[in-house]
Length: 157
Image 1 (cartoon, rainbow, N blue to C red):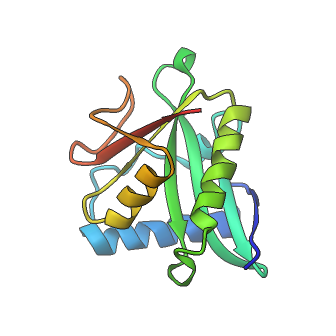
Image 2: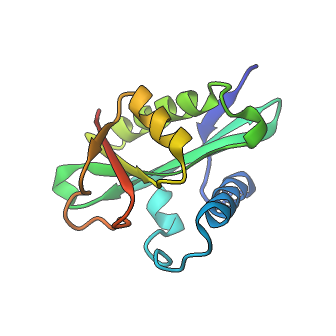
């Protein structure tokens, strides 16, 4: 299976479809939750503060992932957001390809350490992050929003 992976504007139809699909899946797993509304904005995922990566397979959307700057600017921290893969393409390797691309993009943006979080109802994500070199941490950096009950990870670039 061949995937085309590249940066796409967060307001593009492809990126918006990925964001909506990811949110729909989170809503189905965890129920509707308004507690984080307002902490993530499309402009957070636009260079130089962030980026959005989209994967396509034979021209069709396969998945996406974003990064945004978090915490104090001088620390050069970023947060991975909205990693999502189309259900029929899970375990195809596309998530690892997208994460590699977003890590490269993060370095180009000047970020030196990344954070992400997932929930207890996403054991496949938890296993994936551990398998790909992410380390569990107890908290995000000061000034960065996170769910109190979220499983938090970090990776030094």
